[in-house]
Amino acid sequence: MYMSIKLSREQKAEIAQHVRAFFEEERSESIGQLGAEQLIDFMITELGPHIYNQAVADARALITEKMAQIDDELYTLEKPVQHPRR
Image 1: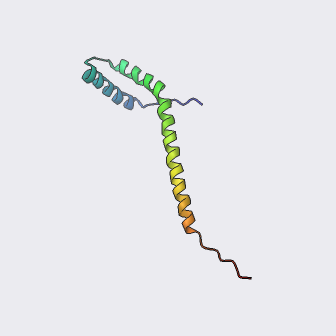
Image 2: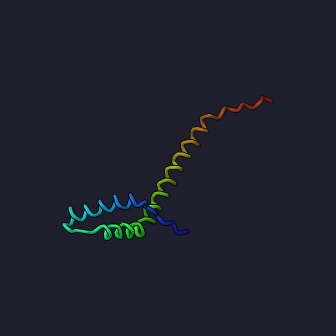
Image 3: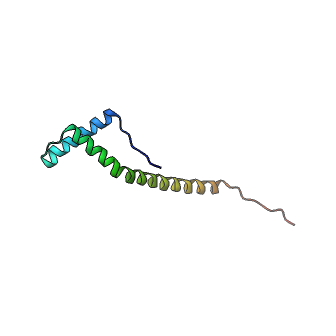
């Protein structure tokens, strides 16, 4: 299953502005809007699946932890069963 991450035009423009500022401040290089947007697309393609998979793994771990807590809480709700004497 191929999943493509889509950004709105506004989101991409805002991120591109941050990319351009990064290049100016950190590298003393100018990068145009098109170059910044192409870099964003490249990074999404390259990093997107890795970040997505890590998020899924983090969610899985959190759900597993919460299910263990719920399981423990359910055990505390059990009532003792007394067997009739014979």
